[in-house]
Amino acid sequence: MKNYLKIAIVVLIVGMMASCEESSGNRKARSVGGTREILVVTQNPDQWDGTIGDTLRHFFLQEQYGLPQPESRNNLAHINAETFSDMFKKHKCIIEVEIDPTLQQAVAKTTEDFWAAPQRCVKISAPDIASWVELFDKQKEIYQQWFDKVERERILTVFRPTKDDSIANTIAKRFGFTLVVPQGFYIAKDESDFVWLRKELERSSADIVIYQVPYQDTLQFESKALLSMRDLILGQHIPGPSEGSYMGTETQFVPPLVTTANQFPAGYAKEMRGMWKVYNNYMGGPFVSYTFADSRTGQLVTIEGFYYEPNQKKRNFLLQLESIAYSLKFVEQ
Image 1: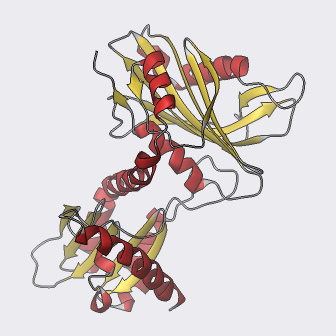
Image 2 (image 1 turned 120 degrees about the vertical axis):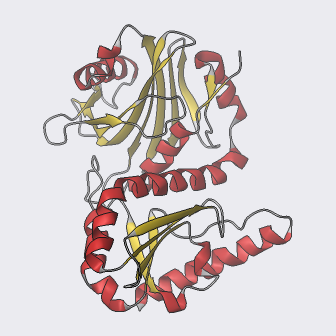
Image 3 (image 1 turned 45 degrees about the horizontal axis):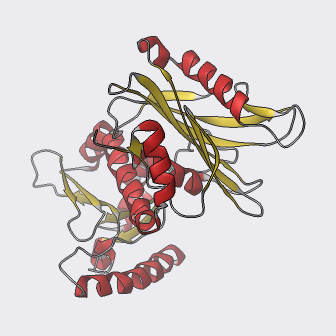
């Protein structure tokens, strides 16, 4: 009940804001919901409390890799279909559950920006629970990718009106592409192949670094090569707070995880997640980076975001830096 009321309050407030936007034109209402929140709509409480709910929780509530404190990758909210009103249909990420014994087989349908924007809705219908779970397990990674895309786009809709054009121009001059970097960041270092952006508050800092080296072959995309390049370049360019301290990578307790980035705007890219640390000091935090080969310039380019805020959750702030990296747009030559 508490969960339901919390959702209702958030949806009601943001929904009122969205209705104002709708009245000013034909634009879709702005989607609502907390960061990394997925709304699950079931036909009855037993589906949520039973196998279907357990399946959804097991996948979507996995811990996100590379964070110093345990945090789930998503948050799940739940309502029953009888309360799935227009107010809740504006939620940004929705999974609907339907068990219909008259169906011949399980089927999944999806809509994008149907009731609001950005939004992704997935409805999985099946004749029984077992076939519902089987289909979900086959396609769950795709659903996560869709929801991740919605989360990034929702953040960028907030960042775009406050984009710092001077920073965008600096990045374009150095690397031939732009990023949506909101106001509040400043340029801490600007060199021919390296740019460091910072946003510092009293107890936290958010950082973006962009660097490039000549692209030689695909071996540069291997995990060890990416890690060596990170340690070499950031160790040279980012000093720690005390004499003799410098940026590095935590490899013992949280080894960096390298995967292929999904739908990165530059094309094929490698994502690396892990923990950064400062050698000869006690600072550290999470980072995420994206590395791609720019065929126009013959350079191997990395965009990385890292965050620092002791004893606080960091998932949502790291997602903001990830979203900035995904805002990449090449400048026409």
